[in-house]
Amino acid sequence: MIDQNQSLPNVAVIGLGKIGLPLAAVFANHGCHVFGADINNDVVNAVNQGKSHINNEPGLDQLVANAYKDKTLTATTKSTEAVSQANVIVVIVPVLIDQQNNTDYRFIDQAVEDIAKGIKKGSLVIFETTLPPGDTQHRFGKKIEEVAGLRLGKDFYLAYSPERVYSNRIIEDLQHYPKIIGGINEKSVELAANFYKQTLSGELIKVSSLETAEFAKVAECVYRDVNIALANELAQFADEKGVNISEVIAASNSQPYSHIHSPGIGVGGHCIPIYPHFFINKGLGQGLTTLSRQINDNMANDAILKIEKELGSLANKNVLILGLSYRENVKEPTKSTTLLLIDLLQDRNANIFVNDPQFSDHEIAEFSVHPLSLDDSFVSKIDVVILQAFHSEYADLGFRQFSNCQLVFDGRNKLNKEQITTLGIDYQSIGNASKGMN
Image (tube, rainbow, N blue to C red; front, side, top):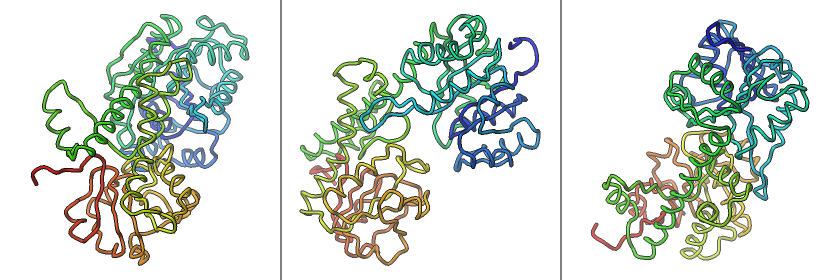
């Protein structure tokens, strides 16, 4: 068992993805012996060579290299083996939703089964994966009890402390974001708090139960989804009234209690489009949460309808989407709005091209679209450009080479309208119609 006054514990981190590996590296650089586990052989091999498989995460490469040099981080594909060597087990295996928006537990259920087969008496298990309220105890704690034959809260301890970090700044956020901690009992909370005090430097927020901690993380994502949906609804109304929503937001948010978010062509990633369904699937009825999901997922369809209104049929039109990633400057296609756009354009028999500097041509082609370099002469045959993710590489994008382009749809309100329209190309965006002063 963890001794609150003695040396750092051995730690198993189950899941070495975009958040799991940074966690493992930070723990290892604080002196813990960390045993990472992941089902991906390539990930495990990279870690065991002192290399990070995650790009664009400042500081991570060095932390992994340091841990390799200090022999404080190793990896394996065998979770049970990693768990058997640890007295703190941190679980960061994703829970997603399927095509019908049902909660998909496949990966984490297997991980928990493996944990239960390797756990030692006196160990602390901390779930950092975002979970529907109640799952830490009633789905996973119960499963460990059954398989391991250990008593929850007596023979092993259980805590929940959700990850709350943002891609491209995970290392920084781990050190500064407050860490919410809930536990099955007071001892579980204190053990988890002591562990994080030893390995992270942020504020600790102890809450009254596992469910409170689980609920808090999902609520954060619902808040953002609802507020983005509000911004999108206002943007659509602004279009009807010929008002520039960007100007409205800047003016409104000068009032300190107004925090209107930015509208956009859609919401993607592992968090916002997924976690509200954790509440919905647990019984949250019709209301703002469900309506917000509908509004945000419909923004892609709204964009296509606007383009069709301007150009007519998109059949056999060459349409280029800028950005496969769900947002700027990350390599992550999960729930990307581009996937919705692809489906809608395929239904209309358009010729679909995608550019994304974060992905190789082969990776883009796997989505049944044509990869297209902006240096390719074929850009002169593109009829429509849709900006979906505003990568930094697009900041200085000129459109002179798009000599056949009829319309640019700016799905993030980031492009230079004047520069585009001066070339004789129509420009549309989200809520930025204006009939006021120029």
